[in-house]
Length: 459
Ligand code: NAD
Image 1 (tube, protein in one colour):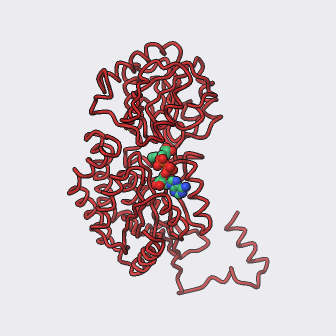
Image 2 (cartoon, protein in one colour):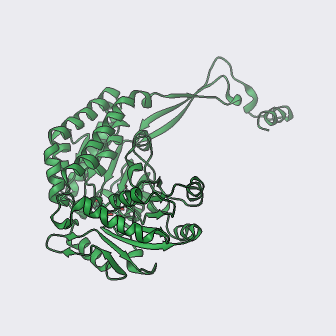
């Protein structure tokens, strides 16, 4: 793909956008249905691509990448007419008898860049928002998951005109070439470091951005937690996709009174999920690349491995691992882990945990396991994070009724459900004034009477 073809695709999309076709509700619904149907007819190929890229189990491929997309498309189709209607709002006394509206309009041509860990879902979910809001879109799936990137390219480019939607395959040079162009909106999912590059590029054209980034999401197990359930849900959230989940519990704080029991329970659940030898399990993913494998191995060098620890570089396999006896200054606590390594820290006082969390960048997710409503409220009130799940992990991001996004270094902007429509929409404020008469107060020359009147209105 040459720089010339990138330029041409963007120019053609700009032209197509100006035809106002993408603004038609029927066109948007038709496109969403077309997208859904083409995913349906490629379902097995998508699952196979995810298996080739990550050894993703079929169940996870459907639950976390494909099925969730059908749900999101259905939600948008069901609500689109309501969302696209201009909304009447009150008019301020000073401007009566005018009428006021908020009028949703698409931005134009948007760019969507996605990562490799849920490589299908994280590209298609924002695309649904872009389509339902009436935009054209240029897509760049991650080159690190090449099989999924190829099937996305096929689904999008075989079924839609490139004047409307187009997916570019290729490496970072393509990302860089795309980021050097002017878009009307950029939606980026990936690391905090690349997020900075994207925002810098966007700032040159004052392009608005959504940045869905990562970070270290803490998981707290308090002494009154239901240990059987919390250990199961924490282990599930950590080891799904071999820990390569942006909202995976990155590290655990466990109350000292329940620590030993909790560790034993996590070990039990690892066995239940993946058998005695997870390397032989069909339910356990692989690390995406040698680069990430080597990075993860280097994080396992400190502390004491109390479960797992087995590795096979040729198969990019790292067992579900628990590491204890760590210091906060160890390398595993200096970066997002993004792999199946679970560091543990014990605590006695919840305030110290909150203090540690607040001293570090705001996380994308925070998990708190406790039966105590007061301490649940305390954690909610005294910490800031993109989202929170009480007594569960990850599930809060899968609901179309809960907006998903980060805060601070874990990102800006939100999507899913109605928020995806909002993200790709500019809400234009409209005031319709009458010409039947004209109140003279606002016009010069001003006098004391006018001043008195305006002071009465704005007091
Ligand atoms: P990444 O930042 O390395 O890559 C993301 C995208 O950016 C890819 O498409 C890649 O091609 C592109 N890219 C990489 N380097 C670039 C550069 N120099 N210039 C321009 N584009 C560049 O992230 P990743 O390794 O693919 O994914 C892992 C990260 O993404 C983790 O930090 C994870 O937490 C985060 N993530 C966040 C979410 C979320 O929804 N918040 C979801 C999944 C992953």
